[in-house]
Length: 340
Image 1 (cartoon, rainbow, N blue to C red):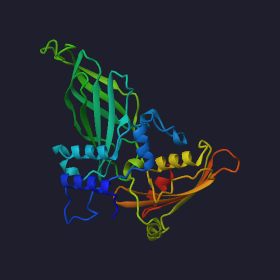
Image 2 (cartoon, rainbow, N blue to C red):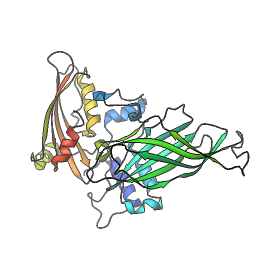
Image 3 (cartoon, helix red, strand yellow):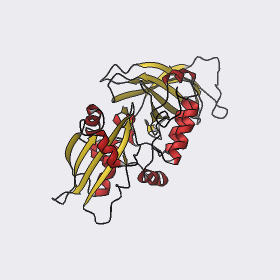
Image 4 (cartoon, rainbow, N blue to C red):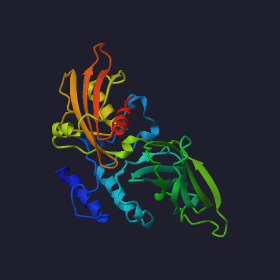
């Protein structure tokens, strides 16, 4: 079967929340990502975040540790919101992305839920000021490079009391053929002075004051948000069946990585794919490693990659040769461009 048992269970749970028309088949089940052993180890250790790979990472890209099961739960929660009933099934939900520092007055994180034609941004907001009562709390997003990312719906949080996280949502229709965005993010709310002990408004009759609070980090979407980490059981057969009509080939020098293990992890994270058949395990003193990778792109497009890592002959960095295949050349090229 194309799932491990844990992923199959989560997929069936999501399917029960929102069944698709027709018979129940593996193809009809929602895509659920598999966690690699390296990811699971990271979640247990709760690291500060992956060191910037390929010099592309930023503070906003260091998500809090979150398991695949809990992101599935976040998707299931979305199905209970009537305004999103017409969107269909969630293709993928991201891990939470920090948009503020932990010491900010208002702490905000975001989970990105990808549907066939839409993206739902689920913001969790925490008020850290015990003398403020917030109401009509919402988030405004804008991509200055692409004005086609227009919000279709904003669901505000009615109120936000001290120390109690609350959620607000933004529904975006994805422009056709667009799989990237960089949003500036602003928190909007009305505020009243409140009693620090009871958290009730000091003067309920006093009109709340409208405020705007720009967040510390921008919110990015890239191809990994539209790619689910799904393994294949027989890589060679699937690789041959996909064929090379839409193959992308490239060579890279990775001077920022000093070991094979670090280079493999950095590239895997950039591609948004999952290692297959244990090929990401690096033997002690190895100087080269071939890694097989797979995933599913939005729309059910299978993505496969064969990569060859080797320690650079100069003694500094790692060299990479990689081939990416899918049934769509634009998707193969989009995944490959994550490294360049």
